[in-house]
Every structure is written in structure tokens, then in C-alpha cells.
Image: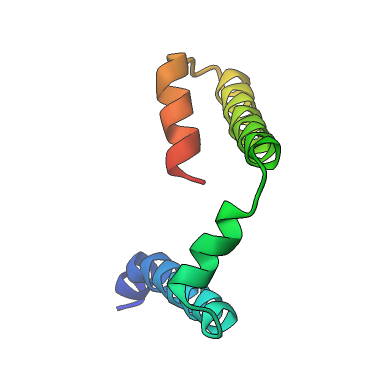
Length: 91
């Protein structure tokens, strides 16, 4: 019985945290319509959008580098494409 609980605990915890995050986001945005959200995004300048994309890409690059270092540390070399896929999939 204890092994069953340990087996399903990470799944239940992950699902619970995901549901809590979706609920928190819905509470933050319940005062706005979808049209208002789109209108506010349209007010952003192109330079701000490009800057956001740059910082997002830099974040993914740093996660990829960190994962690659981890695999190098344990002497388990993987192809760069695999490491990028793992980094993006787990973010």
C-alpha cells in the first residue's frame, strides 16, 4: 500500500499544483474580457515585443546550457537537439 502511495504521490502533487496555478491565473484575469487582453497586447510596441522574445530565448538558452552541463558532469553525453528538447519540455 505504501508503495502505491509513493508511486502516485508525484502525479497527484503535480496535478494539484497545475490546477492551483490555473485557478490563480483565472482569478487574476476574471475582471478582463478576452478582447481587452488582446487590445492591451496590441498597444505594445514592436521593440518591446522583440525584447520580450529575446529575453525568453535567452532564458531557454540558459536552461539548455545548464542541462548540458549536468549531463556532462555525470559523463552522459547527449546530442544538443535532445538536450534542447528536454529543456523546453521541462520548463
